[in-house]
Length: 332
Length: 224
Image (tube, rainbow over all chains, first blue to last red; front, side):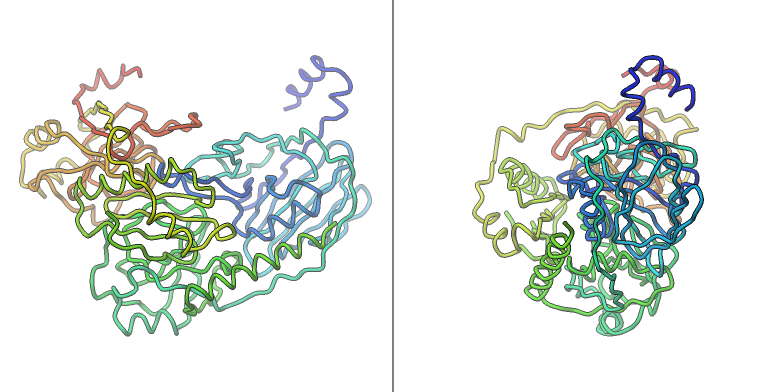
């Protein structure tokens, strides 16, 4: 890396060197990736949507640093990265329910989410953990030097697609900032993530593949989010859901939020990096308005499904979207 | 024709083309898929054609189930020229190191491997859909005596390029992935090219695929 910068130094003018701003990744974190809004119109090729899991928190992070709302930001899960900054003053913001510290030359301060702050040359951001949740977002006020693939830089580590060569963050790598935002205004938002246990669903296309008892279990009993949960899917444990027709269907498309029940009777919810085709019966689909909250349920959390109809789901989405727009407009 | 359009959740149309899995039904699915693609409807996020279904997922901020359903029902569906099938030859090496499940398959089908390969290489395959993992083609149909179930315990890692069978279908693993299909060989041909911004898939729904046996030496010297 040092050699690389030396070469740059020899080649380029002083001005460019001065504007060289970057983060050194000292600790990568458990699953840190670049994410944006995801990529469209590629399911038929076999490429999932991807993009930020918790969309609202992703959008808010960008707004807090004055970025275009759909700019790439860093998504981390559980334990986040430890980053050291080199360069001119830069604005960052963290969203979610996140414990983090800012280490300056002489002092260490506890960080606040939903509040932009400035970093100076040599400062460190240490993202310790997400609090009883899974995902958090770090937006950087400027343009991150990233490769776009199919109009998105979202990294899908399973398909090895997107920014960072399709890989999650590794120790010692560098995040180059090609352009800093002009002004680093401090922005703040009063917002607390609410947690819910009840996830609302619409009946799936194979709802009637399950016995009356199975349907009742699905809609009335509690499930636990298992450890086998990642950006592709969330596996649930609990009372088994009995299938009375067939435990396989002819393989067909999937969308995020679909709840499949394989032969073992344990439901799996498809999340943003899901495989595009599946052959297990679909018992339900999580409504769009509840998706951000669903993905934040960490392993061990309880979850209960509540059935609603399509028009209620559509209305709830309007409300969700209004609230998101409202929060965005509060940041100026 | 579409038999029925249901909602899949609040942001997708589930178009059902009937129970049968055959080329006629699938051709209908592909016609709809291509016609909708050509319309460039901006509220549509994704189209997922499969054997006998087409799932259309959309942006709930821009439209809703009822409105989009109306658009789809009133669409002009193409029925000829642009559906001309591409024909693709896929080289496969059946060296023992690649044919991970051939012994198992001989038992399962009660056929000698020579016969299995003879059946396989003499067949013309039709691409029903691509997906599961990026670019993986689902090709049919194998004759009745060639149909075997998946492995009881799927492999954690199926090598990239593996050519595998299950039920009436053959597929090609476009990259290393977990999987439960019966592997009979390996192709050096690049089926999915992620450096291509448009058409990263070599094989697309509606295409015709012919497999051609190559030796280990040809495999090693294979140059695209």
